[in-house]
Image (cartoon, rainbow, N blue to C red; front, side, top):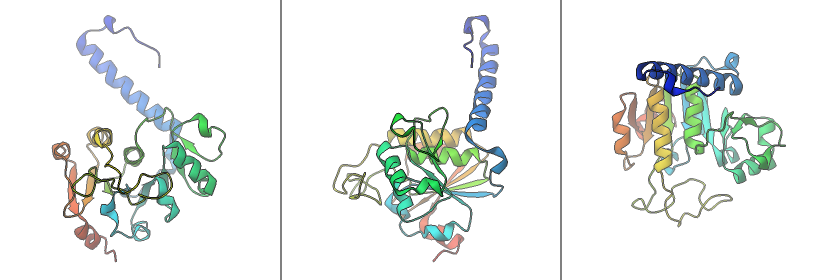
Length: 236
C-alpha cells in the first residue's frame, strides 16, 4: 500500500483515511491467506493452547462440536482442523512427521522452511506467538463464539515454573524451568478481542487459574470453569 503524506490532511480526515486503509489492508490479508469460499459456516470454534488447565478435556470429543484450532506439538496426539506453529524448530518437527501433507498447517514465512511444501503461510507474517495467532485466525473465520482452552498465561507452582503439557519433550523447556513471560502473549490475545467485539470469547479455566486484570476490560469475554464447560458440551 502506497505511503501517504499525512501533512496533506486535517486530523479528522486522517483519522477516517487511516481506518479505511486499515480495513482495506485487513481484507487484502484475508484474500491472500484465507480461502473465503471455504470458511466454515458453523457458529462455534475452539482455540487450544497447551497450558495444563485443559488436561481434563478430551480434544477428540470437542472436535465434533465445532472447528478446532490448536498449536505446536498437539499434532503428536491429536489432529485439529487447523494447526498453528510459528517456532522454527517446531515447524521443522511437523514437517519431519509429514503432518502438513494431510492436514492444514499455518505458519509465518521463514527462510528455514521456504522449500517445504504444503505449509500455509501468513502474508505478511503476524510476528505473534502460536496461541494468539491461532486465536486471530479463528477470529478471521467469523464464528459467533470462540472457546479458548489452555491459555493459562501464568506458570505453575505458584506461577514460578514452566506451564505446558509438553514440558520435558523435544523442542520444549523442562518442567523445572522458570515460567515463560506472558506479556507479549497477553497483549496479542487482547488485541484479537478488542478488534472483534462481535465475537463472544469464552476462556475455559481451572478453579485456581489466573485471571489477568487486562481480561476484565472486555465485555465480549467470559470465563467458564472447566467443570462447567465439560457439562455444557456433555464431555466425558
